[in-house]
Length: 450
Image (cartoon, rainbow, N blue to C red; front, side, top):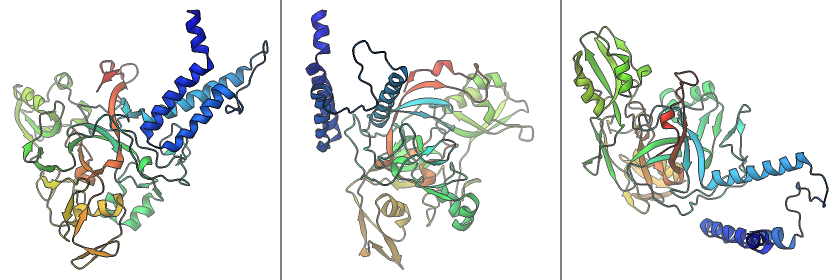
């Protein structure tokens, strides 16, 4: 044991372990300028010429330790370690809405794995640690844009696959309304005009790609797929999406005039606070159910009829032609009857016309940063007349599992690959805002792997 302790305390052994771990990180990062960091590590453990931890006191033998400096050292170490882990491995995230119920519940606290798809190298590196995009209470940006790096993703363990649950930056989150930060700026502009929107909810906040608010949805179509929705059901390349437990739709449920026992609905997993019974129907004008729930309700004697929502063109309220992607043109799509839509893939070339341009306009102008102009039926990209376009990135189509209560790609289009953050790895805490402590804790969901 003594020999082992001597080896572990040997400065050359410590240097070797730390240098090896650092070298692996540099190889993963694929930026070999960082190899100069080995010089710093060598000096920290071997030569000790520079006091890199300038706040850390070197005590003489028998000297009393300064508790405050020791605490400062511990806090700085913890902050650096937590920032490194958050940047390259795991980030905490909370589910704010019911768009993924029943797969993920409102109030679920997640650890999101960034290494799964490969972490993004920070594009805005000058940022306060552990704060995503704005300083709480102060409502000011937590980052500076003095230094900007191009998008680059480190090697991951997997690529985004069909039906993966994915955390990503909100595609329309490049422009945010300061007085309504959770709302879609572009939707408000289409519905009410830019002048009214800015005057009512402004001023505007512009955010870089890596500082946009994070969303979590299911990837229903990946790059190269053709997606279509028929009566709310997803088809990929003409084949129905495989059955996924927990996906739910909105239904009309007619009864004989008696409401369904709330305990029965609760056992089925139905969100009771989102159901409203009406004596005029009689029954429920809107209730979110899985396919299994529908089978269960049909066996209840008081249930007379169950009918799934099915929006046909023009879309039902609160949707409109201006809220369903691509917002213009003669597509006549709704949230339930949508497509067919081809999802762009890197390197693929599409023939561009004035008719299909609305599908790809935001990709060309915003995500891939080109100057686009239209003169009659002629399209110009970067002042060059073109009739085709080659995509520089892969794109994805995301949808919530709560299909009739989810703002997703049907409302804002494709998700670019540079917006992908990671995938949920574990639910470490879950609370129900409709209950008081400690009944609000969903004990069965704690520490569940996803």
